[in-house]
Length: 367
Image (cartoon, rainbow, N blue to C red):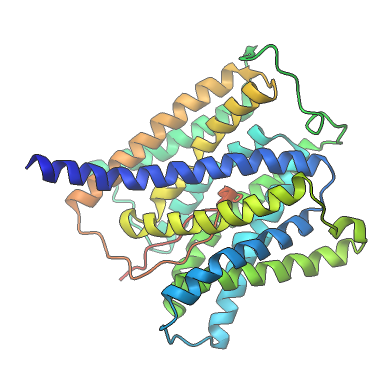
């Protein structure tokens, strides 16, 4: 009996640890992206190169694990792959990067906390997931989502007193570089990114029905997104300087984002979705806000505001309330099985991101 309890606890903790790793990858990407964007990196070049690296990293999994799959690439499949790349990468990540450049890393991460709510609402509207408000678990889950939004709004609109963790630390030269910010434009970009991520999660339902090959889906989505970003980018800026690469932080960011925030995140999220469902990964996005705020304070000398602390507490209460409700549903209700999944990063989450997925989950296939 004790052995069975230990195994159950171990299996349950693997999903949590996996999502913590995803958020750690996203945190590193947020800080690196902010530095290179402030240094003048062209956003569409960053997107194009990043997902070329991501495609290369995912390719071995596609060729090995799905080599015997005979699903054909029909016109309908290509259309959904195109939409998947546009909503989950080109649009959501592009808007997020522009919003990040116009604001700060901590502020931009606040908007990633809206992604679970967007995903939850879109899932209910399209019947990919049930709210189950007539049950205790469903009510607690909904209250948890509301707490997450309240925490995010608190960190955005209320600052309060500020204090520094590390008084000896000075800001990075790249962070303090004189970059002209536009907070109104940046906020609109971040809101658009959040909505695009929410739509992208729902698109996974449609994609998996016509193309149930998760690794090939990720590979082709990366390739299509790179082509999309390159096409749009060349229409905006054709200067060689904007597209050239060197042995610098920009190259490190591209490799890091492609290998960890795309390929590794894809593998982790796809596994967690099978075990826990579509909303479970997205509820961990608020942790990136906490990680980024702490690292900015410790490494870059950024002040921590009272509003951030209060918002963080609300977010944590919301996360664990939602997870409790989700766990209760899995134990007391018959949850539809997952046929297969198709995932990319979110920044986001991730977010991509974002989110995150950078952008970062997919949906349960409804029966």
